[in-house]
Image (cartoon, rainbow, N blue to C red; front, side, top):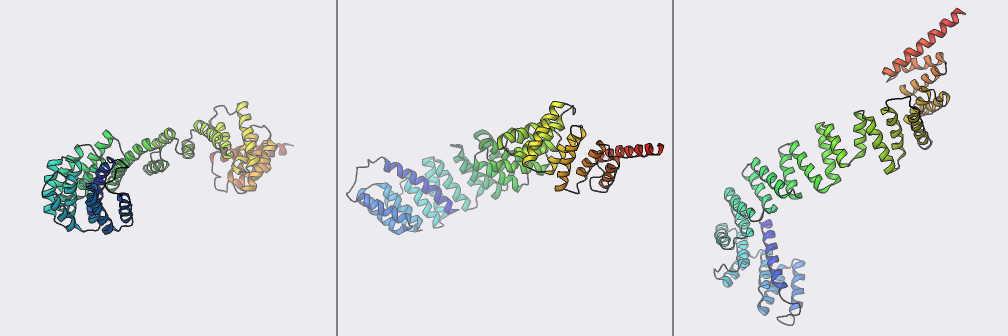
Length: 428
């Protein structure tokens, strides 16, 4: 926690220092070697030689009188944990005067580092009463956290948050509420309120997701991911939303999300198929084929065009489906498309022999498919070869899928055809 505190306040102090440095013109030097000293000091800081960096910055301060060098020197003393040196030096310079806020903040950090929390608290309260700065409210709060006085710590954070609705302060508040005070509902409520008024940033959204996950609140997690997706349109976020909808088995809501977001058209197509919404499946498969030029989508488009057609005898529709499937099977010898094309040619008596040829190609790929064998039996029935058709469909009845309603209907029709032929032979 102390490292976090140092990071917050050194960043603040650095900002203040950079403001001072920027007010000096580039060609204005306090002494000739000033630039060289700065480079050496910064390099020492970069390689974490904090003692050397502190010494060089201190020399710069003594030679130039520019306080930003003093601040940098003391920052490096804190980085090398020479806290007593910082306290002593600030006391010598400030002499209990609170006018230089940066020096007082550095002294407070050093006192915290020495575990002199009460001294740090008293000084921090004096500072915040004078400065009224949000950063100083946070400093007081962190001291109270270290003293395990979480209610008081929270009050100071709330004062800091009220000054600008800073999400980092709110995040710290939520952790104290949720973890330290076990006021979990309050923590979530504060984050939710902020997110709805000021927006759900990544930090706030992720904190809410963490809390909701800990509470096993699936609806809460989903609501945050939906908000995040609306802001960032991320593929990773959409995957999370899809996973949650699938887990909750809310397929209709998932379908609406996929349709609106366009985040996973393949899954949307599958949902259309599962719900037997063949018209939308046909249109989506058409779009996917145009966008991706994948022949598989053209095959699916053809099947769904036929399936959603109210009038299966519509010649124009049949022609469109046959044209598409013929193109597909030239490129991809997929058994499904071969059988579908073959059965269509057989069932509508468009070209029964050609249909049988396609079905046989499908059976070369899947020789024990009950559905493809049923198509073959139906083809021979359509040619009037009832005995051959009956022999095939009897075998179909023994296979998985042999109890399908369409297979059973074909069996009854083919059986009648065979019986009629036998009766005709007896009469002769």
